[in-house]
Length: 113
Image (cartoon, rainbow, N blue to C red; front, top):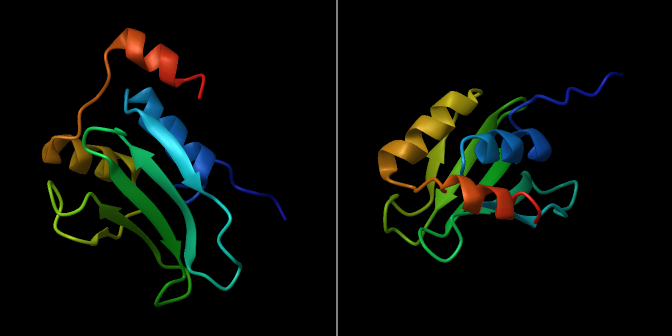
């Protein structure tokens, strides 16, 4: 069975696409149990917007993918969920909500984390 690397629910692909768009991104939790529908959680714009994004797979239905955005209710309603298979939808949503992107020199420093 071949593993698909550029799938939106793949942590490394998701983070790479966000960093390519100059979002400061940290990996928070990648060790959820196999029975937990959460796959991973990341933090975007730490210390400012502090947006947690959690990826869910097979939460309510087999094959379903969903992303939960949680910033304590500042820019997003509490536990805002987005069902999509497109990174462009995720990135556009974040830009429209006002999640800041880094300047070039800040982006270079964040790439080393």
